[in-house]
Image (cartoon, rainbow, N blue to C red; front, side, top):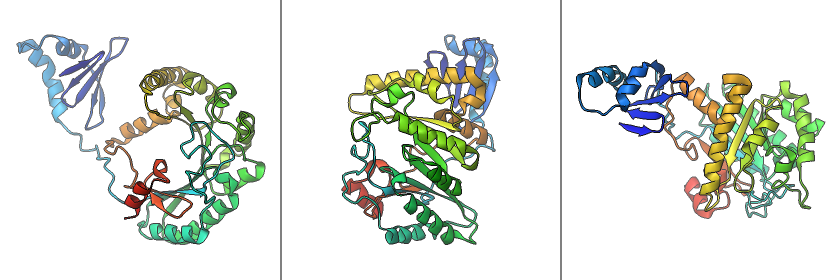
Length: 361
């Protein structure tokens, strides 16, 4: 048994004492949640001397720890590619200071966009292995993918033709900085019924510190203009997500949430851009995410808390009683295709020869 502040780990059970004094138990394997008698907490925190009253008080908890709800399921993912991210434009119109794609969207590659025939061939190969009734996700990424809207349209059309009559569900995701969204682009995205993620780091004063144009100016005005076009067609998109990136360059997580929460985003996704020696920044980020959770709960209870992607992921695991048993899906169910027509297991590895060969072998 291990105590961690107001948490106690006992077998498969995590007991949590709330500030109000109530005690909640969480079964780590069954993903069940239950209210516990406060006397159990008192017994667990007492000296474990083997006396009858301590044993009696914890026996029920011990029985629960050893049980396994037959409705709970393993979340282990086997090797079966069900999603592909395509770098349709390995260049960008911005120059974000923390860019994972080399600062200019290129990942170090001189090839600005992929050869369409090769993309068709590789996509057809992957889709041929998808069984009837399953779903396949195609994500369009950059650089900035909306630099080549015609390529997105063509690939999506070809993919639909490849699965026609096979009972396969296609999902299209687009990750964009938002600066190129016009009414025409917004209509293109609605035609895909796309899941659209707009990269925006919060209020303009925070966003503009790192998300810069090529001339070194802030990009927030252009992003918000594009976002407003997406809001106009929101009902015809599948979903609209805000993607904010934090790190030593920007730790104003609470302020970002307060700004983004007023927009009709289905989801607000926070990421941390880690650099060497960022331990202090990482701790501050975690502290602020916890503060955001409190604000979200006050704002709209569970519904608002579920708008935060990191918590919604956990809610779904609890709802479905599916254990999370994969650190990452890279290479298991997901691949990345760069503009040179080479597969890697993740966008973080694009341009790395060792990672590239491992994915294609």
